Amino acid sequence: MPGVLSPEDIARLDVFHAMIAEQSKVFAGYPVTANFDYHDLFRFLDYPLNNIGDPFDPCTYHLHTRTFEREVLDWFAALHAAPEDDWWGYVTNGGTEGNLYGLYLARELYPNGMVYFSQDTHYSVSKNLRLLRMPHIMIKSRPTGEMDLEDLEESIRIHRDVPPIIFANIGTTMREGVDDIPAIQGILKNLAIPQSYIHADAALCGMTLPFIDGSPEFNFSTGIHSMSISGHKLIGSPVPCGVVLALKEHVDRIARSIEYVGTLDTTITGSRNAITPLILWHAIRSQGVEGFRAIVAECLACAEYAVEQLNAIGVAAWRNPYAITVVLPKPTAVVLDKWQLAVEEDIAHIMVMPHVDRDRIDRIVADIAANPV
Ligand SMILES: *Cc1c(COP(=O)(O)O)cnc(C)c1O
Picture 1 (cartoon, rainbow, N blue to C red):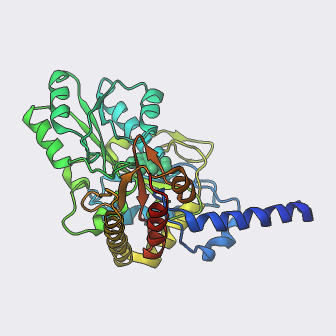
Picture 2 (cartoon, protein in one colour):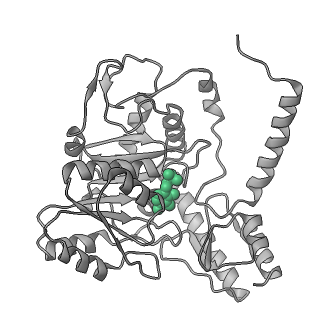
Picture 3 (tube, rainbow, N blue to C red):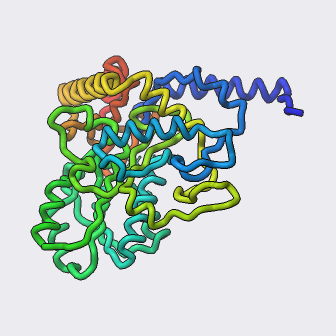
């Protein structure tokens, strides 16, 4: 018998709902889209859907959305030039899980490898490295957020005896700096490194750069081995999610067949969300490449508008080329709290996601002007 909530509990949910609706109007500091409509999918919440195990393998549990998940993965594989018939992937719980997966594959391939990642790398990566017990070296960042390649080259030169595992940022969390993968490949070649692994953390920019002409290259054609992308960031989702893609030959090394569920145990978690593949499928089918191209173009235009408006009131705001992140000197606590802006030391950022339009930017700029530091 399904349970029924008391009128008091319903009223409590009503109050909570009104608060969330209000807060979402002043949401501008995280790389997460707030405008989407997945009502077409609500009816699937009536079933115990579960994509347990490998999305490409049959399963004795039939209430799953693997067909949709595979279509989503196909779309991302094509978008990022994954080599045909030599890629594998799954819909994750978010960028962090995809990064953990990439590092896991790298460790299985090169158990004595050394991981290199920049100072500006997402905070979850050092935890992942501890979890996997992988030796690592932190590389300096440049003021734009990207990895300092001279420091990288020096560090790899000193440790030439072990395979380098490069954890590359394709859009750092705070400044949206993009590590230069072709230049990193050049360093590896220059030092005559025979074995290496590159993972691309493309949490945000995996869904922006492919739609911007002339933007930095980081897809599988540049020789990366795995990539993680967040689904709830640029695409938008009521439930956190992401996609991980990897070269299949490396995944085959870790696959184990499990009789209990009749499928391969290739993923990090056992039971997996089956709603998020539907959400990503809905977004991809309804927007398509052209839809996302237009969305990203509008974000870029609004980000440039935000920089201009802030500069016009004397605030030294800036952004990287191709970036939708506007970096500015840390504003006052009133502004930070109202607009939920993330800070790091003396800077803050405004994330110009699809719901952050010129009107919202005007209101943020007015608040900053009215509350000088
Ligand atoms: C957000 C982010 C992550 C973590 O992604 P989640 O989807 O929140 O797990 C990792 N790396 C970068 C660069 C990010 O911006």
